[in-house]
Image 1 (cartoon, one colour):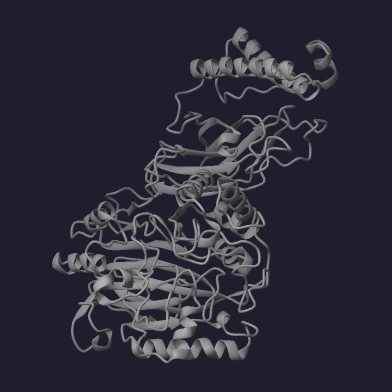
Image 2: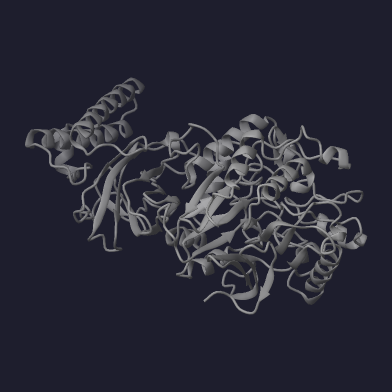
Amino acid sequence: MSFARWKRIHKPVWHSDIPEAPLPAKVRKRHQWLHQHIAYDQWRIRHTRSKAAKRRLRRLIAGHRREIARIHAAYAAPASSSPGSTSTGSASTAVIPPPQPNAPEAGFAFFQHGVASGDPLPDRVVIWTRVTPAADATPASGLGPSATVLWHVALDAGFTSMVGSGSFVTTADRDHTVKLDVTGLSAATTYFYRFVFQGPWRDAQVSPVGRTRTTVAADATPAGLRLGVVSCANAQAGWFSAYRHLAARDDLDVVVHLGDYLYEYAPGAYGNGYAQTDIRSHEPPEQATTLRGYRLRHAQYKRDADLAALHVRYPFITTWDDHEFADNAWRDGTTGDSADAITDWAATKAAAQRAYDEWMPIRLEGTVALGDGSTIYRRFRFGQLAELTMLDLRSYRDEQVATPTSAEVNDADRTITGADQMSFLRDGLSVTAPQWRLVGNPVMMAPLQVTSLPQSVRDLLDSLGGGAYLPETQGLNTDQWDGYTHDRSLVLDHIVDQGVRDVVFITGDIHTSWAIEVPYPVTDTLTYGLMGSTAGVEFVCPSVTSNNIKDAVPGDPTSAANLAAGTTAAAAVRAANPQIKYLDFNNHGYLVVDVTPARVQSDWWFISDRADPRATVAWGQSWATSTGTGLVHQLTEPVA
């Protein structure tokens, strides 16, 4: 079929993919011709059997796209910092191409995985989406055409006050994800963003509208900062109601995710409660160990309505823990439950990192470019009030010790941070830093003494999985800082020796809720309160869904017997560890951390039942640390 006849029959509609940019008439006509011929040649590929003809048509399409790229380079605004993206600083109203209800793709959703933003700074923020440009372009398929996605950023949800727009070309090589740094923004400002994709038949669809916010200027003195804090969200163990209730709030600046954003397990492994029941099964139906597997797992989690709602509402600051890779991961392998399925750790680690970089609104190595590095530890400043240091406690650590004698766990040649990250952490813990030094800490910093506990309680602690590993002969958790005490001493000695005050470790991983005074020196925790002082405090958030102590007991996790087991175990642990002031082993939910010059307050919020997609939420307890004290005290109500 000739192009003219094809055009008469199919009536393709064209709209410029160079937003807000005027084109000379001849260039505009050529630009339109190129786009229409790409659609025409793609149609011919689908309707020819000749392999040689298909190859010739693909070469033609590649040539058309190169010419389009040259037009973009000549007439679009200067490129943004993200590869494949062009942007403009126009403040005009965004124009969205009108829908074509008779187009073949009408009714097909291009944006199936939501939108997200992250890593906010005073002048920029990362925005993210994934486009499905064709029915076969499913996640991890490696199929589907390249797609030019438009993006808009505005001061209002109606996009009448535009501050930036541009286009981003994505392909199957990056799983059709779109991630770019929107720059030139104002500090401490709320923005709205969206994406637009025009299908091969020029039917335009608009993504959900996301809301994000930049941080305050470095020299600002904000009255407060409020964080939503989450970790350990296992889809097989329950519904993400905690995300839904956190998204319903309208008082947060940012959401901090401390790791285990997803889980690698196959269906039937590590589900809900003692019976390990899958509330919903993982995709693909095997453990994620390859790029395909991790991409599909990210795609499944991004389709969760509660997680999507939270991403729409707030920017995220994230780090990874072990389950983004494999249970109990360390630098060169894993010692956990998922180790047997892995035959090539280097390939598995690289695949997990690549998928994370593609699918998360984050800068690795300080940029949004894919494949330029894997450094995820970084710092965020909130004026003179606070600074948040996010750690990576998986990529550089030595293997967890199997028999933790004191000589092994305190070996100066073993590390949990690696030398460079240790220097980075200590540099941030300085007397010249902003007032509150917050540390996004994936695994628990404070010591945990368990040798004096009854064996029944130690068995329950052993069940935490992914966070705790407590054989009968073990008096500490070697997956946490307890297994790397030389590195812990480097951190705590530095804090005390340098006179650094107001250090708060905000921690995930262990699926339970804790308020702790970090003792110094760390010797025998049983003497805490009688001698020594503190090097800071630690607040640990509960899991979103992953099993905790009550879930390790046979029976219904919500039964009175199971709840009593968790309560008994918490009381025993507190009695053996006087530095632990609050401990809850029964609940799932999230933490709200509120920072003012006078104090840091943490509110624990718990959902009614993770197995119920309509679970309610209720306030649990609130604890705070006042400036200069290094101690925690209980409060009678959450922040307003």
